[in-house]
Image 1 (cartoon, rainbow, N blue to C red):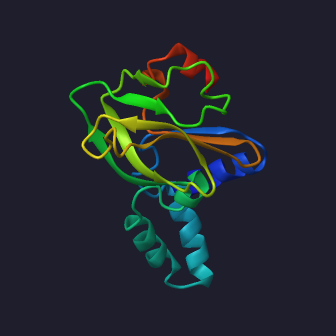
Image 2 (image 1 turned 45 degrees about the vertical axis):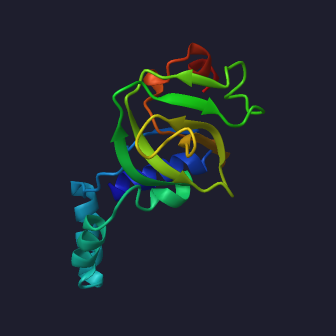
Image 3 (image 1 turned 60 degrees about the vertical axis):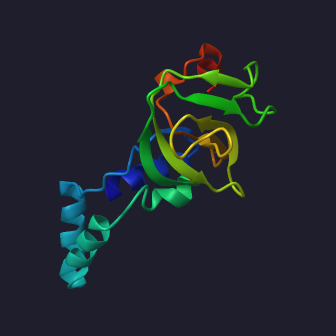
Length: 168
């Protein structure tokens, strides 16, 4: 909800680090708090409530969190075999001590595009229709905000490497 987005951004603004996983935040809805806030604003700004509801209902992907996360959500994809990760940035503490490629436990991933001018791609993913060895997709990205913001296209518990899990 927009109320939750605001709380997450405020947490990050105060130095909190965030690990954002997969397609979290891609289903948009309005909480009772959001609706009440919009109704209150609507009293002094007629039409606000209706415009606000329309705006949230047509929001796609990560919505306003896209610019915050530095990734753009495309879709979720499944695979018949476990997905594989490839280390992209060998200088990151998150990738230290890992083989250059390794198998995960996951058979589903969020397909995203990364804003590489603002976020480092630490791992890339392959093994889905869209994410291939020749055209891998960003799997783990990171950038320094007040704290660290890390995006993962697969669930953390399915990364398949205790070293990678400990590093993250």
